[in-house]
Image 1 (cartoon, rainbow, N blue to C red):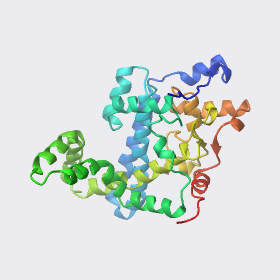
Image 2: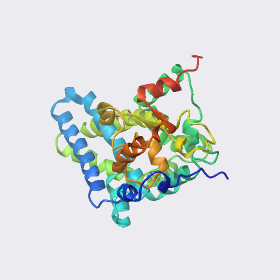
Image 3: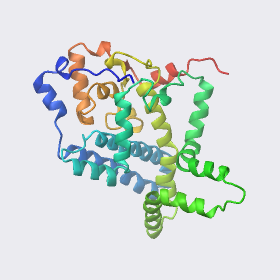
Length: 310
């Protein structure tokens, strides 16, 4: 199997700079988690008190749900906290969970980035696509179809494949067991919102953001990171794309420095909060011109939708 080429950090960073870039923090990762939940909490309160703000709050919360996934990703690299037990516990209980299984999967992506064995290659391989195809994907994301397929697709397939004499109940029980944690956590959240006098709160201010805006910005993030990046690319400076993000894009599309994805693939164990510094150092030393970059997310979306409409 073809392993993706790696850079030698000593060829790009002075020892002092490299030490600062790779330093773990006992508080920064936890502070980012706190910030993420604080934004979600504030947006939830605003949405409950002033329902007219719900469309904006759905976007804000959906973006921070992506933020939790990004911080879980940092934890998968052991970068969220210097203590491995705290690193994994924070990811497991505060960022959505599943860090151990995600780590195993994700490190394969880094090992074989843009190679045939890359498990994420399927996310970037179809591009470019037509604008009509992209619009259909956006509609599926914003109407909850993508979320439903991801959450319940296995169950639907299992029900469709069952024998005529096979009972439905055992299949539902099996699926409930597989999703036990999700059902318990969200069941408690529903009860909490209901007890507070907002029985609609969980649906409007957690499920809807998760099933709509989160899905769309996750798709945009995936596209920006690897779409139109050459398969079997030998240059480790071009395995992923860094996309310039405005303040608004950082708030609603690309939280917690996720836009510095080329730097992340170059030095994958650098904590997310140190990626802007890595970017500045590489820019200062003239390396940026050799890297895969884009001036903005709209620029990337235009580039990946240049095929004629069907």
